Length: 218
View 1 (cartoon, rainbow, N blue to C red):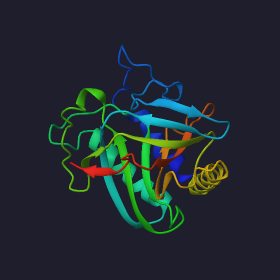
View 2: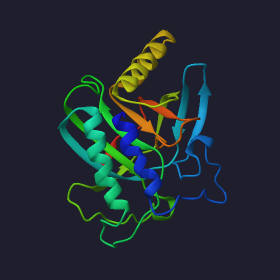
View 3: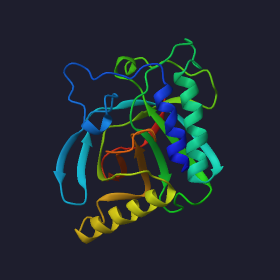
View 4: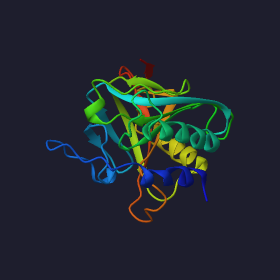
């Protein structure tokens, strides 16, 4: 089975699914898990311009020297251990969405490189995230930002990520927006375990220039 599908399977074994906050309209594709809130500014048939209006905390880990699929597998396991109790409070933390992976666009997911894998910190811990026990996991801040986002269904792997990233880049260039987004770095966001056969959701994000969208270690 494709690596992304395998590692995301562990979502179903997390302690309890997070519930939407009472005043929060979760996107349907989050399927009941807490997601960072955003506003859709513009939408075409190919992509949308989406803005995350808050600075959000994430649990993050960097995996170096592996290709995309292996890096995601390793990073997911480190972060899954963190939410299962490998933290200073020995507390189980609800699973959230998405699993966001920061990639270097020039090298692409097929190459051995550095990848930052991130779990969104639940809203109740955003103000005071639980510190990890492992030296390989850290709490980071993804500063508020806007991004051009393309969405696609089905099971995803490194080839699907690269294809959708190229398609998004080409669509933006075609629309005269080639100078408006950061080309060196982009994100893959996965939302589902492999046990969800239908209505699957994956995304690629290109960060709009003059916004942040950079993982900053706390």
